[in-house]
Image (cartoon, rainbow, N blue to C red; front, side, top):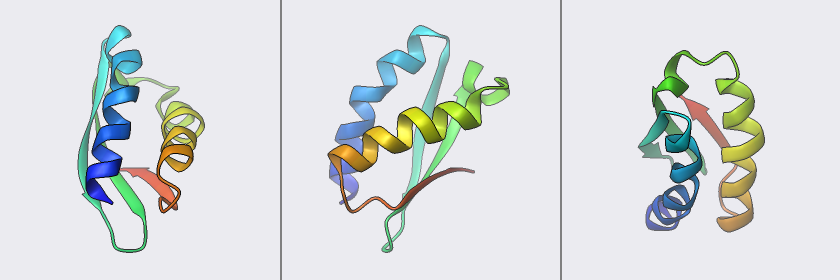
Length: 73
């Protein structure tokens, strides 16, 4: 599942990078929780939680149905 998540994140990253941000995959747990580290502009953005849940999590769940949640660490 980690490879699927990495591939899906590669499709999401250009949109984040266009705004000066990015994310790093930290861990995919056996129960489907994806832990990411927000970096660059995403780290300090007041909309980071919204972006994480409404953009990143939704997209990952579409592409990798085993994903149950995405959390920032």
